Length: 296
Image (cartoon, rainbow, N blue to C red; front, side):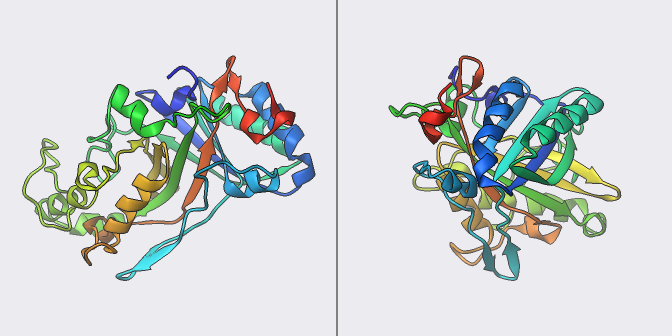
């Protein structure tokens, strides 16, 4: 899939920074996005546009919507939509920081930075809980089929939809749990990452992508984050639609059968937003789906 943003399908990211922006001047959004397109290297960044931004531009991206908020079984899943999302990838934290400054300046006439979260790879793709993350990710052509939209419409083919949530872990709760209790919450043994016959509330049973009808495959590209003594997971999942994410989240909070995911014993989402990630054309973001004024 040569016209997808390459970071979506890249197998490894050592360091990252996630930026989110609100729209403060819609009349300046066109020029700001053109400036962003000129400075962003698609090999080292992924860009997502929120529904508020595409609406402000008078553009309807089929399938795009705002993440719904949910509350069930004492679990709150918030919706905190923003206009623009930038995922910067690299191997040097200082270089990523300076890149984020350049992007903030370029966008400043139209957008205001809401958050900047630094992330990193931990012990070969483990979550800070110690468990491996993304074990069941599709690979190869299956990853492309799960994450990338195929369309005959110019500017849509090769695009993707992404769900982004910042999860905060309760490490005191984790420390108080026995290894057996933590394994039961995840559904895998921390020692060897092997799945076993865990309780129905185990995360692997709540989120088994092949157990849905239709199957709910998506490509997860999550990474740990730390700020001071707080930390957790930046959950990032790409799909050819938002349907798979919503099906899994509904089951995790117990909307399907009243069984909540045991993950909520030690972690919870602080944020939640959906974005549409444009494809690439001639090495640059293809914003053509936003209208003729954005043609490359």
